[in-house]
Amino acid sequence: MSQATKKRGLSKRPKQAKILVIEDNRDHWNLIEKAMKECFVEVEPVWAENSQQALAYLEDCLLVGQGLPLFILLDLYLPEREDGWKLLEQIRSKKTPIDLLPIVVLSSSVYDEDITESYDRGITSYLVKPSDFKDWISSFQALKEYWVDTVALPDLNYRY
Amino acid sequence: MSQATKKRGLSKRPKQAKILVIEDNRDHWNLIEKAMKECFVEVEPVWAENSQQALAYLEDCLLVGQGLPLFILLDLYLPEREDGWKLLEQIRSKKTPIDLLPIVVLSSSVYDEDITESYDRGITSYLVKPSDFKDWISSFQALKEYWVDTVALPDLNYRY
Picture (spheres, rainbow over the protein chains, first blue to last red):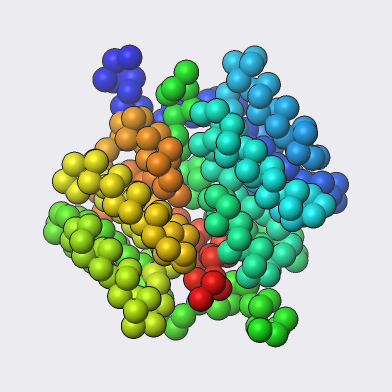
């Protein structure tokens, strides 16, 4: 790999970037999809309704050689918080590069225990689901400006 | 602890919140401090020039009962990247709650190896140092909107 290719840093996003949304509530998925379409340009949200679908999708990304998502939005209560934590553990114990994906919890729960335990178990950050659509938009705007426009994400092809 | 107290979620920030900045280059520290003062209101940047100062500061926060910082900005090359990674490992192996602090690398390096390895070793995200001050401001604005205004941080008193 040439130095020039290795130094791409922020500019190496796939043309049709994806974000994996793991959400068991169809109404919340509809809200998330709507907010994402409003805030994220050229980023496609992919919906997984449960842990099995999410894990299968991530494995498929590697198998068929399509890019992994930029990051994951994970509902915690799927339907119990233990289901969300189990899925988190499964993703974090997958082979590289799946284990490196940033995982942002998106949950209605504002309980300190859920928030703190989730960090302790390896999430990247925790976003409380807003109560009205205006706030969904401002949260997703901040999410997009931070993860898509500002930070450098891991190069998920680096270790192939 | 009452349900009402436990449900504080986003609203429990200390009055004078701090962000720990670990940076061995005084010119970069001056830039960071200036950009933070412009973007972060009521958040005080605390400077550690090396790993020893950073670790001592974090331990002191617990000893004297002052709050831990909201998160850490970590220069990677201190002066070698191995120094940054060693400090990262030391913080992540500290006792809770120090190990839960979000750690954002702030580095001039745009090399995929530095970025990807840093995620692999447990950073929260990676921010490439901008080349001009206007871009420092927009990066710090996104940093502030995400970590201070949008996400719920771990409750660092939760396990005392």
